[in-house]
Image 1 (cartoon, helix red, strand yellow):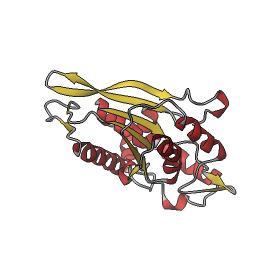
Image 2 (cartoon, one colour):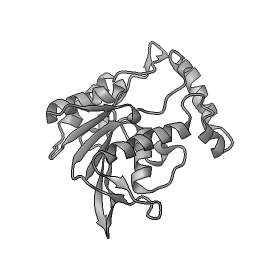
Image 3 (cartoon, one colour):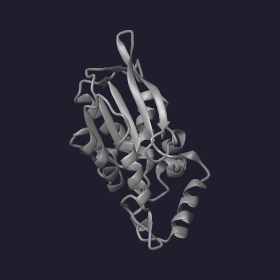
Image 4 (tube, one colour):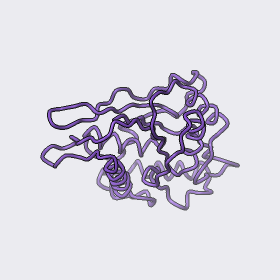
Amino acid sequence: MRLILIRHAEPDWIQGGRMVGNPALTELGRRQSAQLAARSWSGIDELWVSELRRARETAAPLAEALGLEPRVFRWMNEIGDPVEWDGMSQSQVDARIAEFYNEPTIDRLWRGVRRGESYGSFQKRVTDGLVSTLGRYGTEMMEPSQPRLWKVGSRRSILLVAHGGTNGVIYENLLGCGTTPIAWHKFRSLHTAVSVLQTYPLADSWMFSLRSFGDVTHLSPEQVTG
């Protein structure tokens, strides 16, 4: 089984000086998405997409190029920002983010001082959704005595277009890294970066092997953001 994780293209977070909660892509983001779709793709069976606008717009050229109907999953959404951020100025949002990262202990970060979706809830949402969806393909985690080893019942090749945080939690689960806030810093990737995870046989089970990470060779240097 092969999972190809992609971070969305550049979103237009600030419009008219104010934060937009579920932004579309910038003009550069649309060019990044077109370049992503123009990569050489082969043997792709499915396209999974977050329901957020920046991910769906990134996936649209891919879907057309590959002739695939995207499967949209809520569990692939990025961690939910506080509702009050929508419409704030850039300086106000920057101040809230600084407040979050300046918390004195990791434990408080985990509990969700950011006043949006707590990181613990986000991590559980993505993990539960990933495990449940893979289970429909006969791909299941082995018993706890063999952590992060899998029974694999599919050879499908699947593209996932999501977010830095979502993809970070997926890496933690499939690679057995352990969970810590904040996964998007543990696995930092640029806009439209492509990473590949592929199953590898190990005795009577399988493990997910990270074959490549953060590939943006489809972009010219001036197109690289994130």
